[in-house]
Image 1 (cartoon, rainbow, N blue to C red):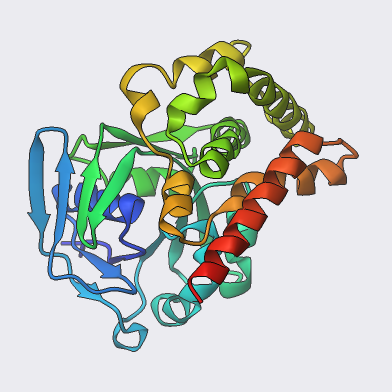
Image 2 (image 1 turned 30 degrees about the horizontal axis):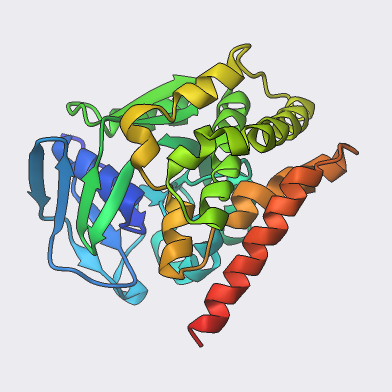
Length: 301
């Protein structure tokens, strides 16, 4: 009988905690690698609540290499996970990067060997942290990964549960840039410290449309294909209850935590300059987010 794969998750916040819950429901045991220890993981999904016996560790020196390493920190926290990489990776470890942005592989490359297989994941999973170890997942989540052997093996880890669906896609570039449209524009929520509903206001519409046009131009230069109904789909996604929710970057802004503006916003201008595509609106939003981030950091010193 084949032993089940060993799995570790770095970061047990909203995404990592939700994913750990789904993996537990699928019959897997997961080692949760965290900065702040908690006794037990609890994940609430709609009207259900479950607790999991996954080991929770905060000392990288006591863990061993695993078959699967799922990186669920925010993009700007990768460097802080270096000790975990050093202890959890073997030459055969597969690394799934469940983060925002379009630079999944580049972000982790300095910490991996040439034999590690990296699986970029586009995460569409609305969840929030109530307190360390207690996650509320607002609805069924979706992870998009490249079709192929590694993607299929990853999807197999989630078999037997239905709180998170793993979708195998032939064009992850387009999926990642489609998600980046929403991530980048939600920087408006962080700067204004408002819920997603601010993106549907008439006062922000021209700004939103201008930002989308810039992101779309850069994404297309990278090979992304966008929906013909991108604009309508974008505004429709913030109707109803969704408009009252907070984006993660806005929550970080309000709480005074470091914000993920580089992977979500600065990346547009960075890649745009590579293609000689001007992105003045995205550059301005990036500057405002960077300044707000610096103000938050200075206020906590």
